Length: 540
Image 1 (cartoon, rainbow, N blue to C red):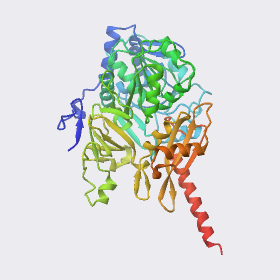
Image 2 (cartoon, one colour):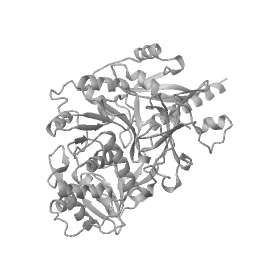
Image 3 (cartoon, one colour):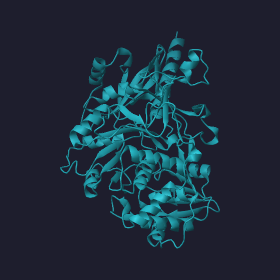
């Protein structure tokens, strides 16, 4: 069986600790230790204002929020951008037995209303009145609203805890992005989050001298776990900005002497567009970390050549509390196009279910594929959920393993390469085509910023390849030039039949390219074309 478990990739029979074996309260213990050993050290720093929250203040703030929110159980909906308060509410919920539901602060009034109706929180933490759609929502009897100003006022006057705080394991409820299907909800416990955060700390060699910077949203799993919780476990400092700013990003890195930065491929592309070259680099900056979406190898190489900083690609899933694989730091090699080795999970490459059925095999069994063969990535570990809420997506859980829906393979060195999503695979005349290989090829063109490849219904082939693109700022490129470029580098079935250039590619609530929307658009186009063909065939 081709199963890989780290830290020893050769130890295929390694048994990972059960969920019950993980001690609760790891995050609170780290906060308490920091407040005792380095009370004045900053745990969180706001990039825009420079305001700080020390370890001692964070512990006092946690105790204050426990009294303010009340005894568990409480369901807290958090609709605030990244900052001191947001980080503190995350840590309070996970350490106090609360259910935390982080949601997009910029949600529309309709989205806010639907989320409130579905989740029915007892507490809503939102921006001040008039600053978002959340504060204007009519709450049901018994529901309480705490605005950002109210929370800040309470926390700023938080006294030292007079007695030992009660610690109780909390949970966070998250919605999957919905980029490949209908959104599903999942719950992660403090133990699962702490387990994943510890793998991040180890794989990135974080220590108490580190100062991370994140501009990623706190309603997604990445920033709270990878940046906040991993920094807390290391006794380190985290600089937080509520949003990315291309103009101010490098000044934040320099001003706060960041030692590592957490980014996504879109930010990498935007930084490469900026003509200004920061003179201080690399400074104290050890590495940049990329996650949440595929990182084009061309952009990885361009980033490292231009800024002189290692760019470490990783792979994460909400269903596992974020990171499940990461490239090693130098001097070990990090391979362009690879997401590295598994971290804290057992991982195997299995025959996709539809292929097993096509071969007459038992679909209830997982069939392992050899190194180099592309198959479905399956994972297991104490941080991996065992089910979605309300029983959704039950087929993704099989024999104690989670079928990720991602396609990939291991190379001879045990590095994982991701080739796309099962639902994204384009079936052209019986040939399965992974969009990512086409996207990476088109991304090599200097004028291209981002690419998303999807299938378009076709009466002859079933599906054909279509490419959506956005261009680098100030660059122009014709469809014919793109077609010539693709024909020189791709086999004929993989050359897109159409190139659609947009100012910006559509994104979902978590900032990822909304491939579902693009596929829906192509499906509708195919249906209209089919109607037109049928009407034409009826003409005398």
